[in-house]
Length: 239
Image (cartoon, rainbow, N blue to C red; front, side, top):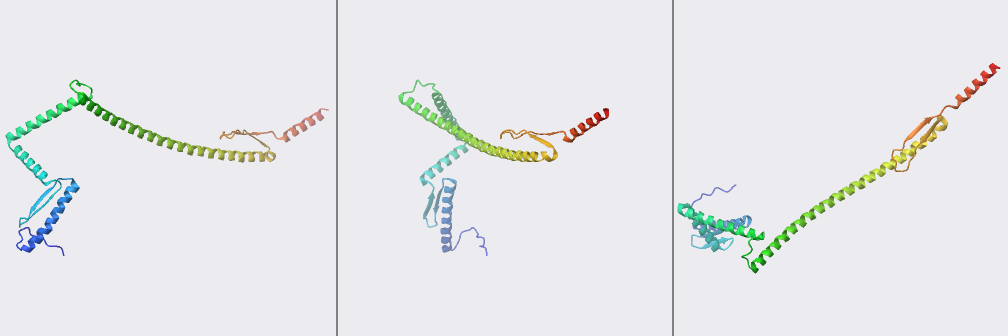
């Protein structure tokens, strides 16, 4: 069976109240610690028991958390007042203008402008800052060039492998063509005595994969003998 719903009200029994306080206090402290660790939050928890005993947890110094709380509460109170809010924003505007002026001045000095009011120490610090910036730029540039060279090497290796595969395929085709020419040559020379067919093959070197094959038919020998017999018979009739 599931646990029944607990009514949120003061527990009259002293023993039960102490047990419930101990359990829920430990759970609350555990949740506060987990919240501070998991969410990187600044947590401060203060508990006073009914007997006046203090229990606390703080992710940082408890006094620092309390000071921060009081400062935020005072600023919030000032913002709620119209005159205090105007003064607050005036201070914020003045602070931002001062920061902007400092950044603009520092930017001009980094560009080598308005250096007349600087001493040896300031110029040395500025030089060191520029050298550090230049090292960072060069490091980033070298990293980009290294990545591009690595990518080009990978592409070159892939192309080389493809060329090797194509070379193997070309050699295989040459071997097949060579075997095919041999078979055609053997079949052509073997049929000449019986059928009277003279096969002439234009066989090239091993790099020619398209060797032409020409076949020529010769006149039968019996036709010549029949012509000679007819001439002899004609001569006898004339005599």
